[in-house]
Image 1 (cartoon, rainbow, N blue to C red):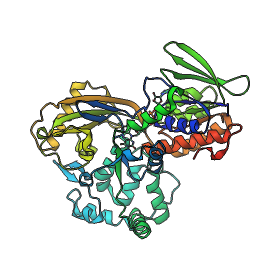
Image 2: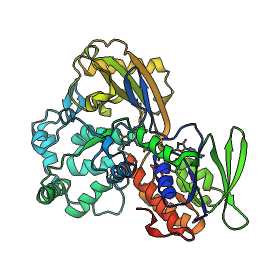
Image 3: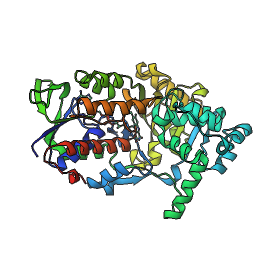
Image 4: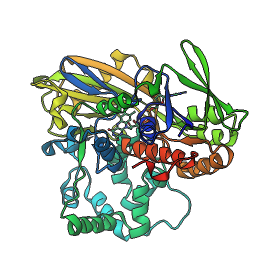
Amino acid sequence: MTAKVVVAGAGISGLSAAWDLLRAGADVHVLEPIDRAGGVIGSWKVGGYHFENGPNAIQGRAPAIRTLCLDVGMGDQIIDADEEFRERYLYYKGGLRALPRTLGGFMRSRLFTRPQKLRALLEPCVRKSGSDHEETVAEFFGRRVGRGVTMSWVDVVVSGVFAGNPNRLGIRSAFPELAQMEREHGSILKAMRSRATDRLRDDGSTGTSPLWSLQGGMSSLTDRLAEQLGDRIHYGRKLAKVSRSANGGLRLVAEGPDGTEEIDAHRLILAVGAPTAGILVGPLAPDVADLLFEVEYSPLVVAQAGFDKGAVPGLPAGFGYLIPRCMRMRTLGWTFASQLFPQRAPEGKVSLSGFVGGNLDPHAIELAEELIEHLLMGELALALGQRKLPHPEVFRVVRWPDRLPQYNVGHLRRMDAVRRLLEMEVPEVVLAGNWINGISVDACVSRGREAAQEVLDALPGSSPESVA
Ligand SMILES: Cc1cc2nc3c(=O)[nH]c(=O)nc-3n(C[C@H](O)[C@H](O)[C@H](O)COP(=O)(O)OP(=O)(O)OC[C@H]3O[C@@H](n4cnc5c(N)ncnc54)[C@H](O)[C@@H]3O)c2cc1C
């Protein structure tokens, strides 16, 4: 196969697409503006600490990324989070309280009042939405379980995944599985019960959602993919322009420190953010670009902190905690990475990551590092019931202004239109990225590999089975 395929973006979406194309024998080239692969995925190691700049762990069975790890020979690197530390907390009304994981736990929890619990228990009796109009996440949960539970529990689930606004995120777009549960079972509780029964019957599992990572950190996967792609990745080169060539293919312009280069390609996979994809396809498909410019992003600040264990007394055994917005604190939450994965901190130390910003506090991204440290440490001390915490041994801030796409109301509909229009107007361009089918690493891998298969199916002389 001689057809040239260019992938723009060496994040996990672009890497998974490029790796499949390489294995299938395609002449694939990856353009990446910076000097390393991985995009949001990146690990930072200092003094025996190991921090993640982006994703910390993979939640759930996540079949796409698990399969990719096995395919690249990293199955033995998978590490499961310590079961003992799986508890998640909510900072609510002056203290950290465990988020209930079962119905019994919910009934015993001091997070909710008696009327709130009784209202939530009526969920199976609430009629399903009869409207075609997509509800926001807040509307959906307000209707199904009541406003009280929505304001605390649902609010933090939303900020934990999207750093988003429950009054803007769409239930079908952001949490399609929940919308499907209501559609098929008429109730979330009934659907969960039915799934638990099926699982017990099928494989005897209790359905606890696994939480896992990789021994060398998340970037060991992107490093492995990059290593196998070798000089197929062109670092320091960004895709700057896409147009049609005289022979009907694509003419690309790549920009780098040493000038620009023209590349003729049969197919292009855009594995970049939605606004960049919009700018690039704009000249060929302006209507697609307009839809891509509508995708909103939430800015997020990640602060990495390393402490002596003794310096953070009161740190509960668990994954971390989140803070509902109604508590009026700026911290979104903290994860306790080294409790889940002990190899993330030296003996006797802990590594923690704090988050500020998000859709409801977008200007936090502009705060100076000292201010971020001051506010995060002050609010962490409060949550742990301490007057003050000492300076962490290590502290570093990572800013992500435009990496968390918001699956707001209408997002799925917009993405369907994008796919349809692109196929009609510029079928040579295929899209991948965390703004298409889901924001998780698993969803990115799944879309990346699907994009590779779409390209292979369309290339002359290719066999659709070439990608296993
Ligand atoms: C702080 C944070 C924590 C997260 N935690 C989790 C988690 O715990 N679990 C989970 O499953 N998910 C998590 N996610 C989500 C997940 O990590 C991301 O959705 C995913 O990694 C995005 O991958 P991507 O390849 O689509 O995009 P990116 O990683 O953003 O990669 C895009 C790439 O395109 C390149 N690029 C940009 N412009 C151009 C151009 N013009 N030409 C060529 N290349 C270009 C960029 O340099 C970049 O390398 C988290 C996200 C963030 C931000």
